[in-house]
Length: 187
Image (cartoon, rainbow, N blue to C red):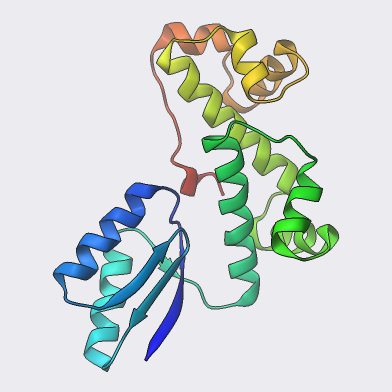
């Protein structure tokens, strides 16, 4: 019988690809692998142990509670919107409430409790990591980066960048010591 397993720290298509390869190699049947979710048929205790070992060996975790699931889904939505799509065209609170079908105050409180930081701070951390990537690519001016990430001004981005990294954007660019964090290490 197919079962849905919720997986923590899946942040990109490469994560899905790795698990696809590993589960296929172990002959564990699955019908779906999405960010944070695998639908698989686990027919024995041995298969479950193998499945869990593959998850853990690749830096992922199996989630247990509804709260963990909500926080992980919140992270996935924010990462998708900021890292892949560049930013928000609506308020973060409206976006999350709509996509998670929950009141934003509930989402916010559970996220803060479970993750240890507010959604607003998490969004800022994501934006700074995206800014680091764009600086490293060297294809955009700081103003274009700020615009891409939906900042009202490049000085606002510059202040947040310095606050989180300890470096100005110019110093970061010239230092070439690009200490970028992986998305699963932000919280």
